[in-house]
Length: 97
Image (cartoon, rainbow, N blue to C red):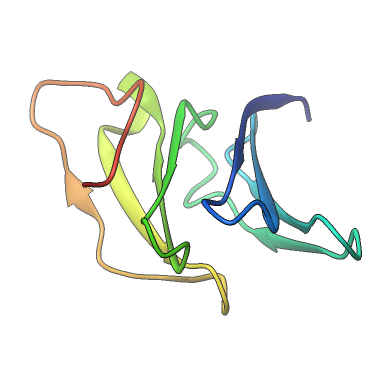
């Protein structure tokens, strides 16, 4: 599918690419090795927002108005943490503090 949202980790070592189909690619910037976080569901829509935690260990993803859920991913394992529903809003951007 096509790339929609690019974001580097805070240390610059990992590039996260959110795609139109909902998948997220994690690319090690030195080795160019790729890992994939699959789309949460076939109807989740494209990735509209990505945010790394300050330590780069957690990646948050949003899927806009089609999904209304913020998902947290463990960057090392590409495994999900619990999703958070966003009531009445679509997620178009995100930040950690």
